[in-house]
Length: 366
Image (cartoon, rainbow, N blue to C red; front, side, top):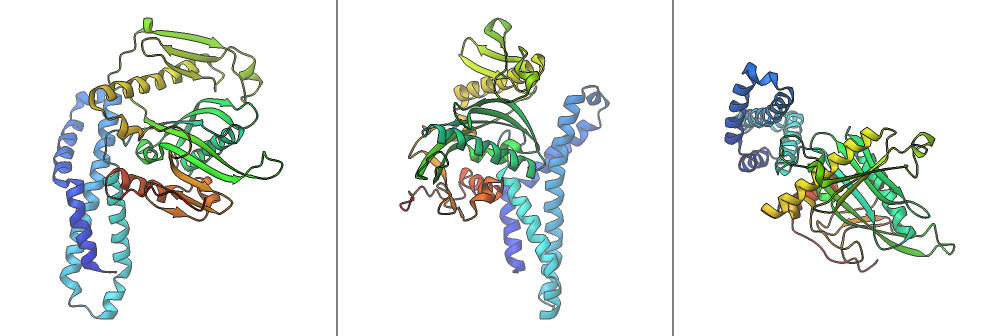
């Protein structure tokens, strides 16, 4: 491992990370945390402490690496080949920390640290597409579990024959929105159909939308007179306690027509709270689009859920998965569908940040 190459990587990261800016911000936050008045506002204190902890980790990791690599550079030329080899574990540890810092630069966009609201809908493909949407729901649920995130189901509507016709979940965890944001788009499945008696090959599509969950720091005004709230009996999976009570809630925002349904808990109050939380995020997203045209960055380009729109193809009979934006390919589709997505996610974040060229060529062999 080349010590000079590690130093060059660290120098390049300095520009991405804006270490002096982070140190100045950390100084402000530390002063704020020393103010007793802050602790009379628990939620504000929590957010301030979390931001300070994130910045402190990045700054201390960078400064520690800077010091360690400088010390090693001063000694390296004087060491024998055997002594240099003995340093390999330290260099490997430094490389791992550099990777961590680089990943932090990919998660520096607005709202990356927030929870994610993920919506899945089937597109072209009928029953096949509904089944594919359910497979994607499982994939992202498994991904969240691998990361130690929590998943809260807002709404799941079963398909007419199989799978799901709609699903919306909230993924809660550090940088959940940042990590899941490059997954927004159309996902394409190619496989011998389990619903076709002849076992013929079918192509299905499903769309994934990812939004940040907004919190009380974002000003979104929802007037009661602008809402229509309907209560009805929950349908689909959920057990007898759900299906025999009027616990499901549908909230319609009359000025915009935005509709949010939640029917996944036995509590009408809880369902209403979840629906209003999602509505708040949707209204925030709409307002942001009007003011800054930032929606494209948050959700990715919105395309029809059909052929030619896909960001990624999962070709099960030929045992590969390919991301059409980054060119990244995997030859273990079952592991991918079991939530092993981090290499696709880091590549997608590089693509979003303009550090990876788009590769949208079609798969002729499909």
